[in-house]
Each structure stands twice: as structure tokens, then as C-alpha cells.
Length: 268
Ligand SMILES: [Ca+2]
Ligand SMILES: [Ca+2]
Ligand SMILES: [Ca+2]
Ligand SMILES: [Ca+2]
Image (cartoon, rainbow, N blue to C red; front, side, top):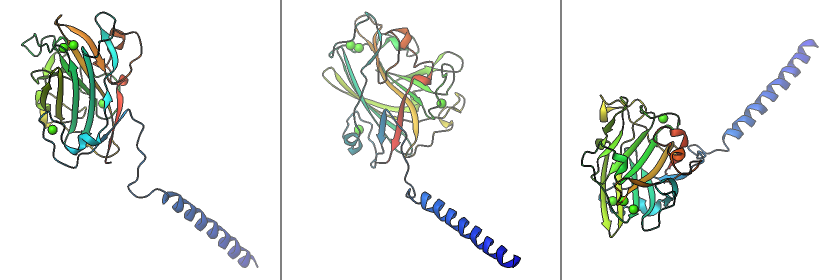
């Protein structure tokens, strides 16, 4: 009798377990293998299926596929006023493959100004495209470390950021850049190697690189320092809203990645 009761209870427990496991399995199988939900982002960068020619011409198919992002957020203004459309207008596209991040900037600027021959002297006061990248979207301070990079890319294609010694250094070998002109409009095409925070100046381009893949979330900002007749940065425009009054309160990107926007790499 006791044996029979034990057998019935055991059978009941087994049935419950099998049902529970089956329910668990069916829950899991509702997501197809390889299917992922993409994180929320300010920009979704498509992957290029063809090789990129960094020639300042957006004729690769992926540049048709990628959407425009605007660089319409005013961070700094010398007179407190926004720039007119002919003074500065900027927009960007981002794409990727396993090796590089590809950037396209379309900039309208009425006067291209490069007054300082030394690329390390007051480099933010000459016209430059500025691209900020925090490959693991960690946020946080990056002023004198490589938690994130703030590449100032000048008209002569020299790229500058601050090193761990607090001084500006050239990081021109992190990227390939080419620009074409059409009147006051310039199109900048770039291929950028993305390094992790383990980057060191000693290892240079042999430093650890980020693994670029579908669904990867990164921090980023696209910006332009517009210097005209004054020879100084008259306007600083960027891709993302930074709170506070126009001026130094919004000039935080060079110090902290916590104000960066969100960039996601996609395979579609
Ligand atoms: Ca091209
Ligand atoms: Ca201008
Ligand atoms: Ca980081
Ligand atoms: Ca200018």
C-alpha cells in the first residue's frame, strides 16, 4: 500500500517536472537562434557589404542605406547666437564592418580656416571635425585617459586628442580621411580603427581593438568647431543635446563620455 502511494506521488512529481521543463523550453524557443533585440540608440549604423574607398565620395551602397544624423545642437557660440545655415550646417552618417567604423560628414562652412601650422597648438580654434567615441559605452571621465577618444580632425587631416600626460598628441594613424569640396560644402569620408580603453601611447596602433559586431552599443558624438574670420572657434555644433546654457556648460564632451549619444551597429 505504502509502495503504491509512493509510486503515485513519484509519478505526479515527474509529470510536474516534465511540464515545467517543457514550458521553459517553449519559452526559450519563442526567440529564434541569433535573433537579438537591439538596444535603444540615437543612431543605428548599417554594415557595409562592399569594400570602402575613402575618397570623399559617398558612392558606396552603404552610404545610400545609412540615414542622415544632424549636427544641429549648439554647444558654444561666440556671440550667444546660432550660426546661419551658410555659416555652418552639418550632418553625418556612420557605417561599419569588422575592421573599421566609417564616417561621412557633410559640412557647409562659409570660410575654411586653419591659422595654426602646428597641429598641436590650440587645435580646437581651427576648423575641425570632432568625433568622440566610447567603444563600450561606459560613460565617465576620459580627459586624460582612453576610456573614450575625442578626435579633432583638422583640415590637413591631422587628428589630435589629449594623452595621459595631459598634453595633446597626434592620433592621425588611427584613421584614413579624405575630403572633397563643392563650393562651401565639404564631404569628409573617414575609416577609423576603434581601440578599447586598454589603448596606450607606447603600443599605439598595436593596442587592443574593439570587437565590432551586430548589436554592439557604443557612445559617440559628431561635432564641428567652426572658426572663421576671427581665427577662433566661433561656433561648436554637435549631434546630441547637452543640457545647460549655451557655452562652457555644454562643452563637456572632451572630458566626460557620460554626455555622449548612443550608437548601435546593425547588420541590416
Ligand atoms: Ca567613398
Ligand atoms: Ca563658418
Ligand atoms: Ca569606455
Ligand atoms: Ca570655418
